[in-house]
Amino acid sequence: MTRTVYVNGEYLPETEAKVSIFDRGFLFADAVYEVTSILDGKLIDFEGHAVRLERSLKELDMASPCSKDELLEIHQKLVELNDINEGLIYLQVSRGSDGDRDFVFPSADTKPTLVLFTQNKPGLADSDASRKGAKVISIEDIRWGRRDIKTVQLLYPSMGKMMAKAAGADDAWMIEDGHVTEGTSNNAYFVKDGTIVTRPLSNDILHGITRKAVLRMAEEAQMKIEERLFTIDEAKEADEAFTTSASAFVMPVVEIDGQQLGDGTPGPIAKRLREIYLEESRAAAI
Image (cartoon, rainbow, N blue to C red; front, side, top):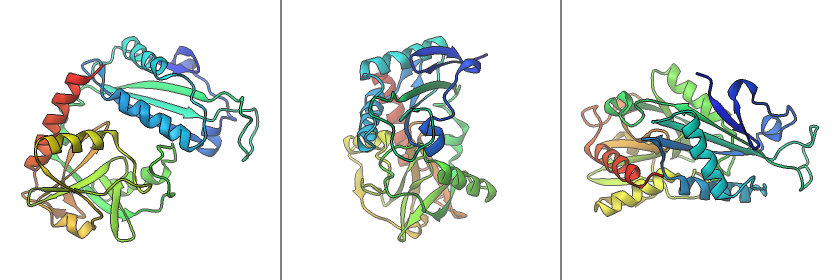
């Protein structure tokens, strides 16, 4: 089935979608993005993603292509047109194109490029991966310093995924100055003696929408949380670990750098948080 995608005001078959070769997203990675999950044909935490998108645009002095209400309408229309029950919507905004390649930003009246497309993912909420748990390796974090801005500069995270694959693992956790920053496409946590430990928000990590929701839910469930720097060795000695992201929700981690956590199966806190997150998110979806 050919997907219907959205490009600059038009709903088009994916085979007919076009963006200029001079678009700054293509030439300079001068673009930001968001990924929103779809469960039961509804959007999960759209408001959070829309607010973070506005923040990313503001941090890069990039114009917003449309209002939040218009963006919601586009998302819901794409879900309908592509008949998505479980899946994802990818959104990208670039600074646009003024018809040539130049490091200097184009004039203020250059229109940003807005692209959205869906991904159909049956079984997203009830995945084999979440039941089995993920294996991660640790790698050096050599990304730029503004990881709080959700840009499309994803080459190193992609390389990290490939390093993990080559090592027979599922993902990589990145290390900077001796401490874990985050996963290649997720926020990282470990649990020791019932306490959830995760790195605090700063420019060093993405301010995860799922992270925010899961920590709120953990607090409401009276779970103990510590937001602090931690080492990979601490995580290896944990009772359990997990990651959070919009596309995988709460993903248990069962092995770090070849060292098994607990009994090698998803831990009780990660499993419970995944259950709570899916239940509450479905109830609030739009």
